[in-house]
Amino acid sequence: MKRSLTIILFFLISFSCFAKEENWVHLTRKNDIDVYSKKVKTSPIKFLRAQGIIQSSIENIVAILRNVENAVNWVPNLGERSYVKNISDTEAILYDISKMPWPVTDRDMVVHHKLSLSPDKKSLILSFHSVENELKPIQEGFVRAKIHRGKIIFTPKTKNTTYVSLTILVDPMGDIPKWVVNLLQVKLPYEFLMSLNKFAAKTSFKPVTGIQELLDQLIR
Figure 1 (cartoon, rainbow, N blue to C red):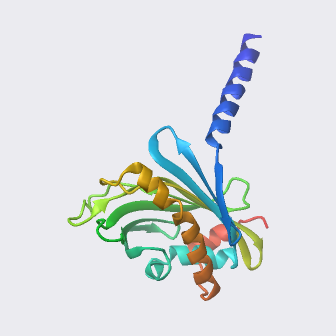
Figure 2 (figure 1 turned 180 degrees about the vertical axis):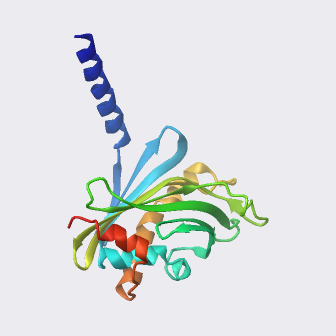
Figure 3 (figure 1 turned 90 degrees about the vertical axis):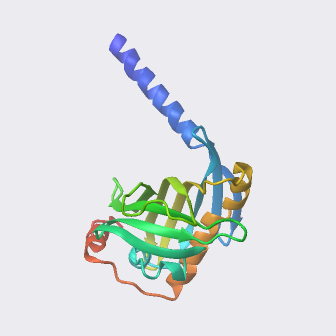
């Protein structure tokens, strides 16, 4: 009896935590992209999510995201992207510089990226977060921003359409008031998906071997 009560209590606590975690507030819908936000206990910065259909194959989309050299051609406000460490076809540590409007100081960050197959094998998941790396110490003339949590889920819908969901909790750091950060950052996930959609429509990239192996395992 005691063991049964313990199990029931465990599931009740787990469900309660899950419900709180999923307390998203819908902010806007534009060009078939929905944007949400939610408060988190660990940061004054709001967690953001954007989701919608990208008019391109999942193969092209994940290949675009793995192509570091072309990132500056489509990622909003990106001034530079380079490898800190290219670990494998599906994992890398990257260095980014984000251009900020004057007089705000440009931001840089060192970010670990890893692509994996979802447990149900219906999606690919790109997880990313900031890391410290001795190869890229804090640079003079920049403020080191921090991505606490980031994830992009790619789910193929048809041969040439992919459902993409981006969630991110990022702090630009520095002396910008957090309420201003929340006000300005809300448009960033939407702009990212829109830029990806436009770039994917006019380009065709082939996945590298390691990514193709993940794609081959997808249940469609």
